[in-house]
Image (cartoon, rainbow, N blue to C red; front, side):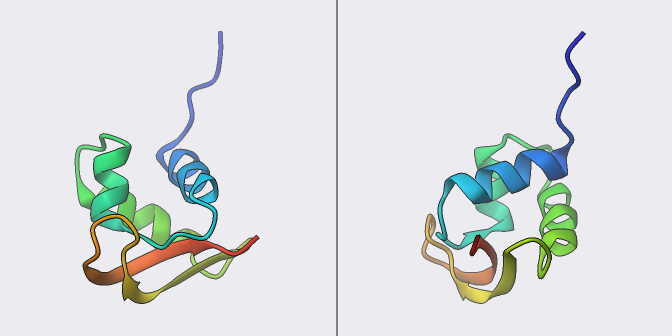
Length: 74
């Protein structure tokens, strides 16, 4: 039986696929069909500053709103 991905793994995979585009928690939750923005926020807060992920306040590349975003800088 295949192992299911955790929310954190799904969030990190999405951010990597977006190739440096900053993403806010709201857009991540929407794209991954998560039940709450808090699920995305926990994952992005934990990933920020680790393994090439950068968390900052900037304009989201999807919705255009100024929010806390995460991007992958490889």
